[in-house]
Length: 195
Image 1: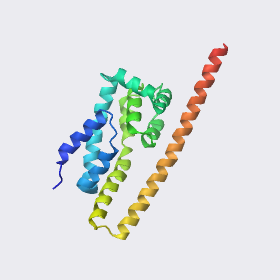
Image 2: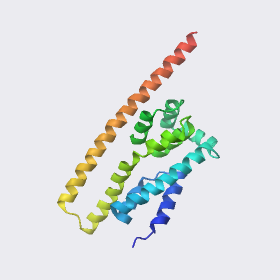
Image 3: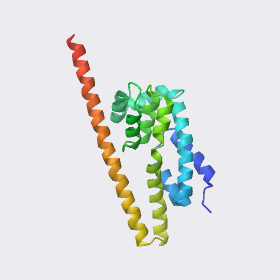
């Protein structure tokens, strides 16, 4: 029996995500506490509730505070510039998969003119990312108990490496999109100044 009931863990994770707190440790810990399958279910439920809560808070009562926080963050400023107009689904998918802190992406998307539906749809691609983190926690717990076979370790290591490679490639694409966006903005500013 886990130390924390799964429903309570869902609520803790949802609250953390809703308030924009980094939740990576909680995601990995779900794997430690509940194993791979139940841990992933707990994380998906908590993250889903938390993303809705975060969206509402960022667009509502916390908007001025979140805007100031993003302006103090270099990546936050870049994301805000990138998201000055509604984001395409492709861009949303890249942002969700990129290795950028999720609280920055969540807040930047919520403050942008991007509608809820593409944001929510793109957020579904986070499930494999959560699965990798939950599995890392579950594997760590199994390894600490000495109940992990060499074949299980090898197969999970290969899956983790493949997922990491995909995330790195997507991160590079996003970085290129950010650089293009910055260059276009500078050209527009320069053209506007010369008129």
